[in-house]
Length: 383
Image 1 (cartoon, rainbow, N blue to C red):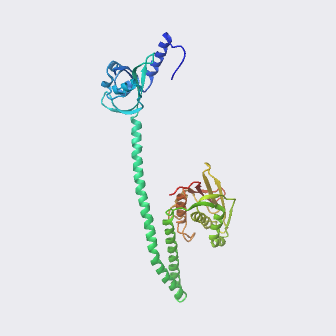
Image 2 (cartoon, rainbow, N blue to C red):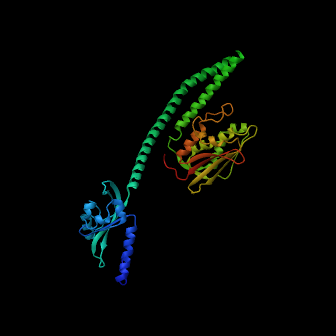
């Protein structure tokens, strides 16, 4: 800093120097100054605490004897005198008791009243704890990366296993289902009542197995194919999903309404699956004897960087302790006799939403029923 005006002299200068000396001595950081020969000229309390040497033991001695290779070494002094600069550095120092301390040092020239360099001052602070914390965080980061890699490989292996297993099971199941169907057509009503019941059990079991294998294949594919991202009219998407669920909606008497819906970014085919699964789930879990009413709406996210889509119903609702469980594979809150299904639909939905960079969840409505919500960002990165 350059200043103008009369130079401070006499008692005022002495007062300023006394004030500066008091500030330096009181600071917790180690402040050390040496002359151009490297002899220590000042050593504050912070230096005593950091390095273990008292001022009386150090002042008047060569700096490098106390702290070898310090920022005020002969090389650093020569650089500063020559007009160079010694920036902030991190260094390893040895205390009086032989222990090691890592410090962050900043060095600057000391000038006389005429501006000539007469020495060098160094401010140092103990950064050992910060470096240890950084090293620990780096260790945990590497460990987390390694675990993520293992988890990713495990997930890939499981997905591949699910695909292969479900694909390979399809062929023998078709053969079994064909034989059971033939048995039903030829012999139902020609044997006793128990035989007819057994045949019905076999037919129903084959159908449920076929549905489960189909859903398992869908789950293994979900999130693996590249997204065909485009602008998608959410209103037309809901209408397509309602049309696909026509018989289920008609049989249940469900009513599906939607407000003015926006255009979102995403894979049209995948998002149809998301909306269809959420609507089907709402229809399935309506109150007995009461047609469920479902409302689809959307609003901008708080950060104005995407949309929150809600599918609200007045059905039986979901207890809080089950809100995360329902998005896992094969997690059912009711028996197949009460509510048919494989327990994979919401897991597929969660995977599709995650591939879009969004999230999914469920809340309980004050008046009863549930609201499933999905967030979709405006910008979708390849995953």
